[in-house]
Length: 295
Image 1 (tube, one colour):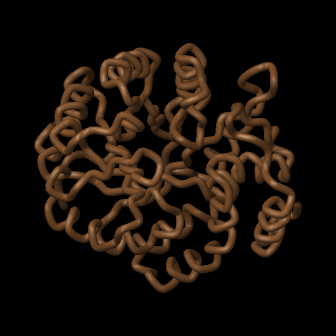
Image 2: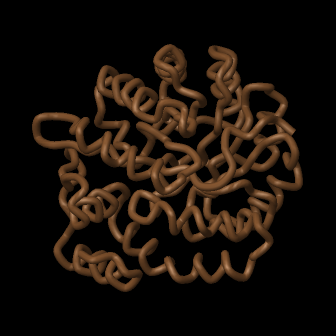
């Protein structure tokens, strides 16, 4: 078994912003809140972090800043994927240079590619640094889906160590785990599938929900790994309405709205993302109140 980057819950961090740029004071507060809750890893500049609308300079500075503020208390996983493999390699090297512990690389988007293209692209990125690499599969956003047999090929590379699986297809997850168990660690990329994926041998979740309730999300994994599968499932079901509300508009619009409702950060996002629609915002507020968050 290749070494796990982390086991449990890693938070896919929002990037707090204002019209003037990245709000680093808010970012520091959010990092401290996560670490105080005992979160197992921080994922910086991925989908939830609005990587597509960050400049390369902002992107790398956010990773550097997060490494500095975390100070070794949790691994920093840098989102460095791109639809241009050379750009992904460049960003991966820069993330390494500022201290990232691991990489999270989404499949190429928009221009797409074949399964062969996925293998060649990920191999080139993994060859470029000695950092462990987690492959991120989210076909609903990218239009590309990694097949189980492709994961089997990717598992042969010593630096490719994990999967963030957000294809939503449990049958595919079962087939993938049949092929790569013991060679790749699987993380749920969907908050409503934490327990189902861990039941197939997954080692945790890269979570949006944990931006809002970090300790409670982590408790799902803690209970599961302690053998309390029933308790973990109960928490999974308890937070399902909040999870749904956090995805009733495109991520990270609702996550940023939730942070704003809690007084932790602005809900500002860069175009083409906009503020949450009023009816959806009320749905989110109710879901937060229903789990005991005072908003």
